[in-house]
Length: 314
Image (cartoon, rainbow, N blue to C red; front, side, top):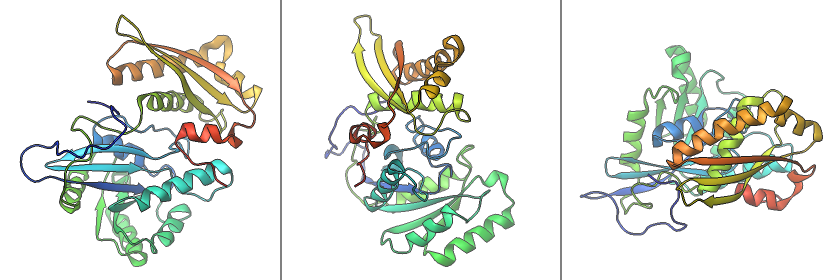
């Protein structure tokens, strides 16, 4: 298994015997609809971070799954919402950019929240997209069947979906049927990535994202949305372990105090959680060092956007 071992896309057939298929499937939806949870489940590994905080996913993450002879590249996009800041706009641009690159578009709707607000606006925007579209209702374990059928009917009134699926991203209900359909629908062709690769996200960036996830899980009610993590140094040690140094950027001195916590207990807990998970993914011992810096206007710095894989909005 690998996260990203090469920068290019393989043009050689790497599947097993018989004809192969491959293609890109863009997952779009409102914030916290469950896209990242679904991608992690379908890939079978952690490739995208998850937290209670809205807009946790900030840039395009591609998770790679295999179903029979088909390689399915899921494009996990940032949640689409009405932007208020430059960072918001950069995320929205990235989401729609992922849509335009896909063979199939999958709209994920949180069945508990229904079709309102951001989900309703996304439906309207989808009417103009030419790609084939699939509707996916998530969190079906929490909603009555009659309500699910009404939601499906309402969504299909506005957009011509080729198929509707009902799943639980958390439990995996309905996911096999969904994967089987995608495997049949994607075009014939060689696999696009090596068989053991599960994401095109560089490990340095995934490690930073994991630390940001632990930061949000620990402080999602106390810490403002505008915090950012970067992997500054990555050193492979002779004993087979890896030393990682990361910086957490916040916008206020008060935010820095929150992240560090009394006697450093909060940042220690964040570091412990991140180090454990990064080590499990790498299958290596990890020495993780976290630093917190105040950078008041980082949200206006194009370099920070490049580190996140986003284009700075003009």
